Length: 263
Image (cartoon, rainbow, N blue to C red; front, side, top):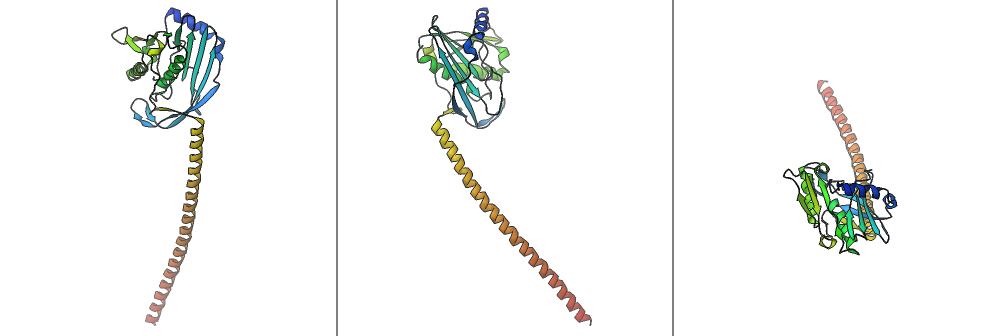
């Protein structure tokens, strides 16, 4: 999934979205957090540089007899994003036995083209498969206004299809499409782990320990190099003084020889 993604715009969905907006679970914040690594990738013509980054995955879920709710939020350190960015909401309606994914707003991911969309969808599928593998999945409309350009639209469609969704365009100019799938069991729960990796607590501690050790080693090396530079500077000053004295002595001796010769 890319910076643009799915959104419903049918009258029934608008009503449903307004109801969901008033739901008390909508105000829930993340309760569980996990570190994730966005691996360094070659620069992309559309999205630019893609360096190594670490982000946080926040998670909260609630259950009742009639419905269940999951919210996934990816937070970027030192960067504030809109509440709709990097947020995936999943609702399970137990009466209709239906799963709805991000019915209130399109899924937009930042940084773009880093595999975050597919990762969030895969996590949603894993969550739904635990109890409701037989539930149907609500179809969603894909609007061209949610795609910045054709490249973003193609990345969006590829991400959806990779997770098992079908993307069907309703017009020849590809302004509007429908994203659909039969049941949860037809969706795929994998993602591109060459782009996104989850890091557990032990791995995080090991990374910090290695980083601290490397810093100490580099500090020791820098200290040795600074000491060597200071020693060389001192030797250089001594050599400069010696050369200056020799030059003065040579000039004095030459002047003395000239004086003796002219006498």
